[in-house]
Length: 473
Ligand code: BYC
Image 1 (tube, rainbow, N blue to C red):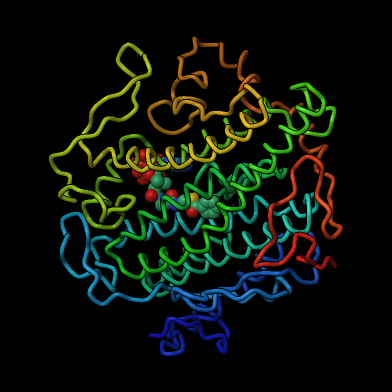
Image 2 (tube, rainbow, N blue to C red; image 1 turned 180 degrees about the vertical axis):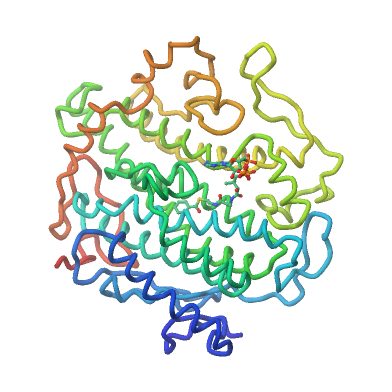
């Protein structure tokens, strides 16, 4: 296998698809359904072409090329990172054995489930972001949105390849179902909660790419450790593309904070809404919402599912091989969040294996904190005393230990009835949302940027900020 993608094929790939006619035919018959779904559920804003990055090689250097392409002609392909023939399983009961090239029968159902859940999130995010193009703050941002969208769709291809190549008829049916479910649909919603929330404005988009794409990074990081080598190699390459999505979130929110700080100083007030900005308290409410909804994506604080995945070698820990322990975890323990018998918010010690969702969530939260620190440095540097912060893990939860209770962003338990009275202080209200939406007039002239957000520091791939990143139709 070469690392370079073969673009002469109908489906670009580096998996020698042409050598397996049956698989190739199966994927070629899924392709028109995918394209139909992209037309129906992908970006709604009509464009001629967009300056996009396309993966061309999975090697260390020069893995992507940039060019203006009509989005419907984007070459969605199948790319796995290069195979390491000596790779061995790093954890669980199969530790030390060669990584699997085929799915072992006993783990088929579990692997299928993990791949379907991962695959389901990818088109979901494209659906959630479908209408954002119409209110883009600049051509630069519009291009980044579309880049994220085409790559999430490619990540769907990545999972569909695994389904078709390794799970027979079940896999083909699941691949169809991935196109059938829809974000927010009453009859066939997406599997995980956060992927049924609409991304109705660009502040939400930047929050989503900061917080929810980062869950993607961590979940993909655990699947990259998988004993099932094709899944591991697929996720490894997806993570390369994923980095840009988080860059979009981090820099997007940094630019919002910068602009907010400027307006606060200029008008000498916290209430910058009437001056065309997003106030810090509204930013905090959006942050509270997106962070808490994304914590739900980690599953319960304790989970026998995750213990079984780990023991079987299907899903590892973040940076598994850097961990200094036995990689079996049979006799280890971990402290996890819990509601005590007296109803108080606290912690409990559980066997490490069942606490692995908490382990991953902890890595994720500390990563999230970096951005918050960066935004707080901007505020402090402008002489602004207020700070942004991540809410407590008990705040606004639907999954896990805290799903049955109400808590403040500080992690204090609320009495029954208090939540309804107080939630408007902590989560975006209709008034907040409509104010944010009212700022979202599209700015689509070259080099111009909406006034609620600071301009980007630099353009894409060495181009200036006023480059013609998107040609509108
Ligand atoms: N919503 O044992 P538990 C991304 C279910 S994002 C609805 O605690 P487990 C991306 C759970 O399925 C990354 N249901 O859960 C980002 C289970 O059901 P069953 C996506 C939920 O299995 C941005 C039951 O509750 N990838 O890539 O330990 C843009 C008990 O739960 C939820 C993955 O998530 C929920 N939030 O952990 C684009 C990786 N949470 O078995 C893309 C694959 C739990 O009783 N998935 N449930 O029927 C997994 O690793 C795990 O399935 C989960 C859940 C982490 C999701």
